Amino acid sequence: MTMNRKKLAPPFVITLALLPACGGPEATGPAVNAPTGVTPGNPPEPVTAPPADEAKPKPAGDTTAATWRVTRTADGKCEAFREVKCPADATCNPPPPRATTCPDGLEPKHAVTMVRAEGASECTYQVPRDMPPCPPGAMCNPPPPEPPRKAPCPD
Image 1 (tube, rainbow, N blue to C red):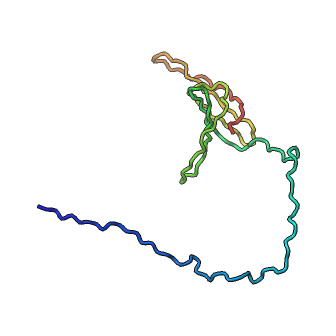
Image 2: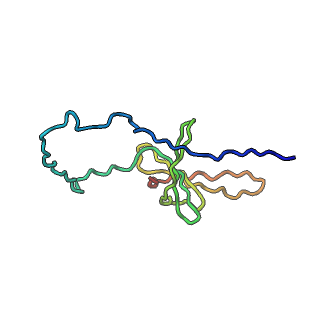
Image 3: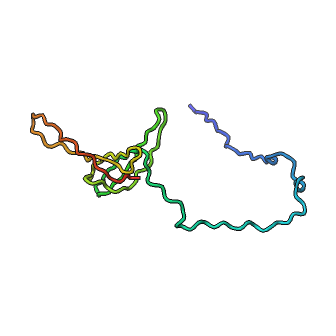
């Protein structure tokens, strides 16, 4: 039994030359209201920038409320991931992590949450405490939380 195979025609491209895009009349001379007999004058004097010492003062650091998750990698470097709140029906792409100084007490492969309150210039954080070993069958309480520490924010 032989099968008839259909051969498709090879695709081809047609290129059309279009008329000028605007299709309007071509300009044939100067504008109707062109000034006549005006000679160009000297350009205005250049304005120099004020000296560096008179420049505007730098604003103080950011004081808006913000939260970061700071992690310490095995090699001892720290990265700050800014937490972004996204509307319910939207997808957000958070900013990339930033290198930052490691907060005191943060051990490798651990993380802390740093919080800057509205109007504050420093962040607070708490170093997590590991649960001490508990004998089998015993019920142990976790250690009390450590008091908050202050540190520069990862901005």
